[in-house]
Image 1 (spheres, helix red, strand yellow):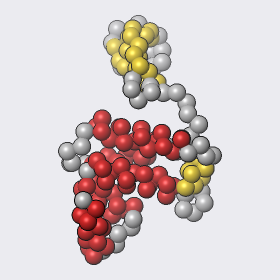
Image 2 (cartoon, rainbow, N blue to C red):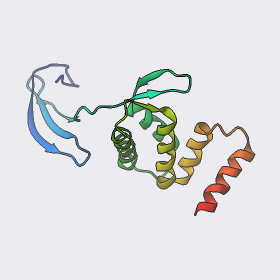
Image 3 (cartoon, rainbow, N blue to C red):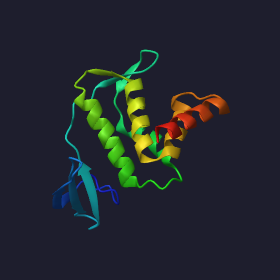
Image 4 (cartoon, one colour):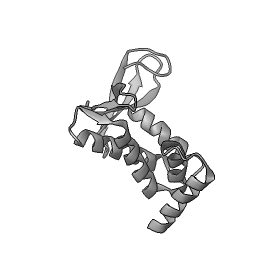
Length: 150
């Protein structure tokens, strides 16, 4: 493990705890600069390939999902741990499908469903881009649909 402060590779673990998210949090100390830092290790899951609209395939990237969720939740009263839980839930659902390939649409639908529960404004923000809502009428229709589900 490389120290983020001095980039030395001479570090040692001072404390280890298991997190509810399935990861292991390790508190480390650099032997060279004596500064401490934390790392979170996750078990390597069998993450499926994501099939994009044009047929292109790429590995599932939880950071891409997190970026989309963060953009949708920007300036909204949604905590970082809540966003992290949402992305972890989506990742767990994708892995639980136990498929080698998953359509990108499946991930987008799961993000939409999660944001609907988390914050309605964030849901609308994400839906505008994801559902390709091109004009105010289509946005209004989506808002009315959301209000009708209340």
